[in-house]
Structures are given as structure tokens and as C-alpha cells.
Length: 252
Image 1 (cartoon, rainbow, N blue to C red):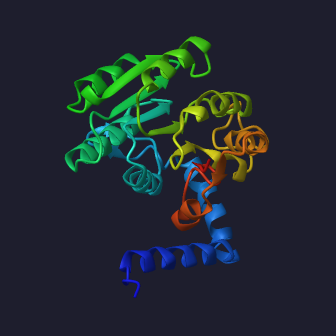
Image 2: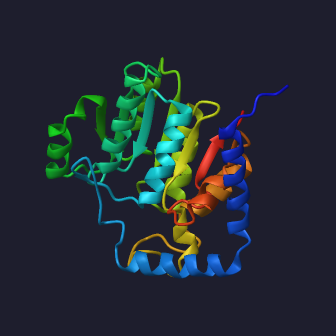
């Protein structure tokens, strides 16, 4: 007799609810309006993670926590550092995995074309800075890509998060450069795909917007690379996320 697994039933119920959310037109209309409003009010610029500003929706941090716990990566590569809260969040998750005996010597690699001095100082002064390496330069520069590849050598499980320049061409170049490092069963998480769903984009005067953003890059990438599939359940159950269709799971 198969033993009852309450966690499996709980996950099944989550999937059922997430599928219902997708087909709830009133809910989806409300979410579209909410996305438009929070983009205009800079809602994501409201939170800290362990004392460092983190420019993320809280729901997306919840998703990251679930993914990191499931995947158990010993290297997380993040493009786009900003204030540094996201790499501090990832570092804190790796410390938890280490404490639980799931990984050994986890590392965070952050890349940004310009790391502001005050942000860099705050990151380096943080107790978790020993888990973090930072490269300053364009994430699609060949020299930076080669340095990342060197860091990735010997790692057992790698997770990638893309959250830097949000133009179609830049994100597509990042996808082509870094997804080969993603381990089977792990994820490449593409940030701010929601730009495509917000008329006029999220930041007035920005080079990205409808038709030129991370989601359009994901669509083109998936046409040429069949090793990844969109994990639809994650975004569906979050309801409010900056990364709809941006949770790419490596399946082969």
C-alpha cells in the first residue's frame, strides 16, 4: 500500500488553485491594474533584507526561497546588483542550506556594469559578504562571461538570475551566455518580464517597454533552446510577480 504523503497532497492543491487563478478573469484584470499602479508608485523600493535595500516584490522573494530550497545550488549567479539586497538574500539562503548540511561552501556571484561605491561598501561590510564575489562590468562582455565560467567550474548545482539591463537584446544575450551553466533541474530566473504586461513600460523614458523587454527575449530564446521550459505554476500561484513567464526550469 502506498503511504499517504500530506506534502504531495498540499502541492496538488496549490497547483489546482494556481490553475483556477489563471482562468479567473476578474482576478487577472485586478492584477493588471495593480501592476500598473505599483509600478508608478515604486512599490518595490520599500523593503530591506537583513539591513540592505532589496528591490524586489516580497512575493518574488518567497518564490526564490522555495526554488533555492528545492534546487540546493552551491553557486547562484546574479546579473544586476543595485543596492545589494538580492545577493544578500541569496547568500542568507545558502548559509541556511549549509547549516542544514545540504551544500558545502555555497557562493554568490553578482555582476553589475557599475557598482556604486556606497552600495559596494555596505555589501562588503555585511556579515554575509564572505559568501559574495562581485564583478563590475557588462554581463554580456566576453571577458566577464569567461570569468563567470571559471568561477562555475567544479560547482555541483548552479542557479542563474538575470535582472540587469531589461532590453530585449541584452537579456537575450545574457540567456545565450549563461543558461548553459544552469544545472538540469535548476532554474534561470528572468526578472521584470512584467514590463510587457504594463502599457508604456514601468519607467518613463527607459529604453525598454512593450515589445522590447525581458519577456520578449524569453520568447525568442525558447524558440532556439529546448532545454528549458517555463514553470507556469510559480507565477500563477504568486499572483503578484515581476517575472511572469520568467521562471525557466532546465529540464534536459
